[in-house]
Image (tube, rainbow, N blue to C red; front, side, top):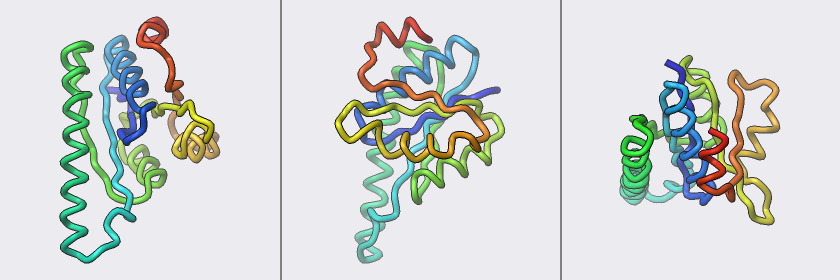
Length: 151
């Protein structure tokens, strides 16, 4: 089965990326994989403190995932899977895509602020010509109605 890979992070634009991936999956009979990457710099403390912080990050990710997953199941009839990795986000995303042949599209949300679309969009689009899957970039300020219309 083809799957949409969407990145779960703390950005506002992540919400539209989740919605887009779920709606496209529902309309095409595909699945959704939600990938969250915990950066290594969060754990550069004493070993015990780092372990506590790592566990807190995982709990926060699971809590956010459950909110998105419930909406996807209830509204779109899509049951997403969660993958959590630790490392630098871009290499981890690329590694995951390379390792899962069912990933058909990477879905990213683009920020609307003055700083540009965000670090993931910026870094991954620079390498888009060599990626094994297409990237769909969802504007962070699209309305729910517009998302529904285009999916």
